[in-house]
Amino acid sequence: MKVVSSGKLIENLYLIGNGFDIHHGIKCKYSDFHEWLCENNPMLENRLFQVYDLRHGDLWSSLETNLGEITTESILEGYVYSPMMLFMNSIVGEPIVLTMDDYTENIGEVGYTLERLYNDLQIEFTQWILQLENADSAQMMKVNKEKATFISFNYTQTLEKAYGIPSSNILYIHGCAATNDNLIFGHNKTPYELLNGWENKYSEEELAVLIEAADEISILYKNVNCVIEQNTTFWQTLKNIKNIHVWGLSLSEVDMPYIKYISSIINHNDVQWEFSWYSESDKNRIVEVIVNARIPQYSLVKLDDLISSAHKQLRLFDD
Image (cartoon, rainbow, N blue to C red; front, side, top):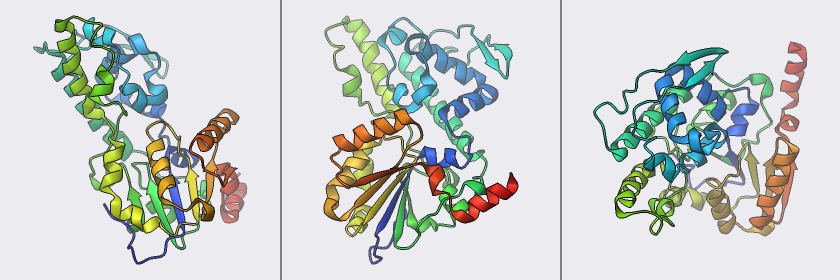
């Protein structure tokens, strides 16, 4: 991890989420990953559908959170470790049929099958990130680089490539794909949380299978508290923060421990928060999150309204 020197006065903190890259025209939604996976590894996509979507619904609407929501029915009824079922998937309107499954050949154990599933998912996710296109320069925003530091929740290098921000001023809190970091990707459910409530509902044999599955599901556990503890040196540089810009961050359950921790180590009387929003429903949800986090001084802004004047002129000229 590279952090800003503790001797440098930091007054502006930017928290950069996936919405920031989306604003710049980068196709980095989970739905984009789904489309890419259908084309590049349809067997893995079909297995994910078999394990999750049969009982869950739309896995891709909030992929990381939903990965921790595997149902006991999927595990105990054999969807996890059974031979590949036949499903029809549409890729650009053209159906494909899958008739084989290399995940379960000669494998009868649910844990090992889930381990292979999640390891392959991590590999494909990294490959997808690496092939994403660069940011649209016409969408660039006005960023105050003076006395500033950045926390990127993204796996891309948009801040470096598009804005020329040195990597030493960026904390890639979940890793950066281009620098071969081990990406922190996944859900927020511990094995205990997954198993909570199962003990009295199933037989000993069924529970043994569920315990094994819970251990394997924890492969994709995003341990936010551990990430916070590992970055103690960085947090110490934020003692003089005046402005916090939260741009493109979904403020999901996985994100909130970071927001709450930062809120706990700053002087609220001296800090102005700024949160970006996309839609009215998004705006209302963000306000609710802000109130629950007890953040007293804040403003709301749309990223489109922050495009620098020079790039607005460029965009008009291009049109």
